[in-house]
Image (cartoon, rainbow, N blue to C red; front, side, top):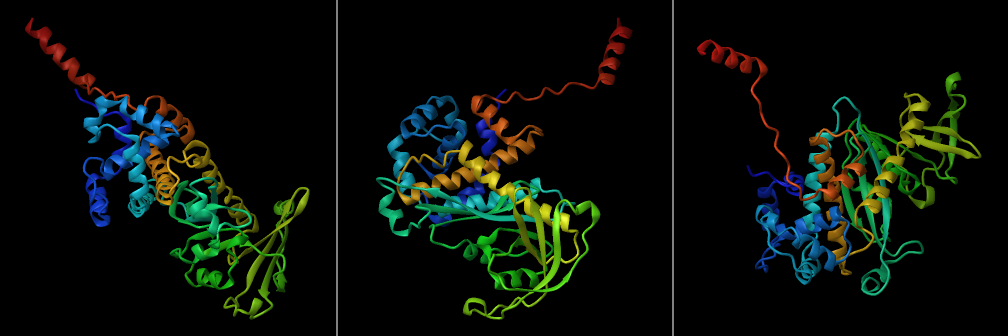
Amino acid sequence: MFSLCRFRALINAIPRPLFDRLVAQHQADRYRHSFRAWQQLQAMIFVQLSGLSSLRTVEAGFNRQRRHHYHLDCGPLRRTTLSDANRCCDPALFAELASWLMTQTHRHLRRDAQELLYLIDSSSITLKGHGFDEWTAADRTCHTQGLKLHVLYDAHAQAPVRQSITIPTVNDVEQGRQLPLEQGARYVFDKAYCDYNWWHRIEKSGAIFVTRFKRNVGLTLMCSQPIAPEDADIIVADEWVRFTHLHPGGHRNAYQQPLRRIAVARPGRDALVLATNDMTSPARDIAQDYKARWGIELFFKWIKQHLNIRRFLGRSENAVRIQILTALITHLLLALYHQKQGRSDSLWLFLAELRCSLFDRIIPKVRTRPQKLQNMNHQQLEEKL
């Protein structure tokens, strides 16, 4: 009986008709003869899952599994062909596939009873040296030379919902302004997303935001709220405030509603001053929402440590973007496969196990007759004898 290997079972979460429509939309196979976009996608997912970091080792590792190529609908891999495909292919194809997978992952992993808690942040990817400097040096900042990955992350589903890749000079808040806002959702972000007019848009959309005030912000105290005795060790102050200036920095501030300022104690450091438009929730819960922002930091740390976005197979901008996008695609496929298998271990342990058995065939479960039916058959046989 034929059975799929685990690598094919993982990729099965991508509907082939959907991918073919995206390929036709972007004309990704227009000038290709044998090495098409489907094989390029599988090769780059193999790069992420195998942990291999050079074209030569990827070629040797993938071609070692020739007996699986027919069922993967691909042929032997040549490193020069993969290099050329990554250099010339439009990354938009992989970006759209990643967006579709994010929608599916968010729908499958999120529980309906949980509120929408979104985390917003970015992480820089350093690209320096020969081949990189030609297209990254002109847009470098004092802190970063390379690209910046922006992510909207669902804290409860533990999966990204939206992504974008920009040059490092793009301000984080510019990407924040482009995010669609959902009524009733909670958005948590740091001081890099300080834009009072954007905060006003979040307020008007019926959503909640939790962030931090900058040190030089002008605020007028309206009233102080009592602190619950059980929160006295965590909450230093809980106040209602209003912006003092209508035109801070020469720009009109549309946010004129009251805000809530919560000071959270930090041992050995100054208190953490939070800003939110949630005027009713307990201060401890709001502090916990901001603490949940660590989840997106762990996500960036996970993909950088366990997937391959530090050593790149190519040095062109297209090749780098494709490798980053296929890392996100691989993470989403792993999350879906992990959930489908009903696993309770961590995603990292699941990936470590998968790497050791990537092309092992899945043993199908043998369906047996119910015990009652077996007993009846034995009884009938005894009566005949």
